[in-house]
Image (cartoon, rainbow, N blue to C red; front, side):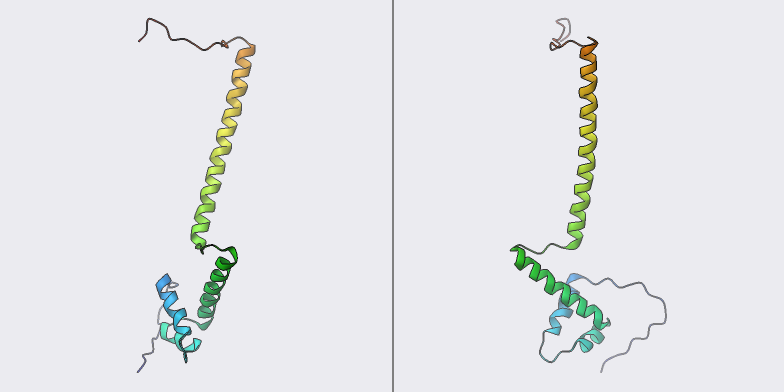
Length: 125
């Protein structure tokens, strides 16, 4: 006999792990199983099961189309964030480099620094 759960308080949105999602979607492929039955069994809406099945199907299709492995969206977001950070640092370093080149050029023009490399003093080790 199945039990009925009565929700009497406001609850946070449930986070489903990947194995839980896979298990629920795999149950949909069992002959005789319906989306409604699996949804009731796991206590989720049928539309969520349809969405998971669609996402898993599209992810597999994308991998086949690209002849590559499927990468999680969270991993893609993290990598894009890292790229933005590296581009920002590169931009800052490029600007610093340009400023230093300009400063050296001005110093050469005003003869504040020699064009010859500085040799160490013999008095100092």
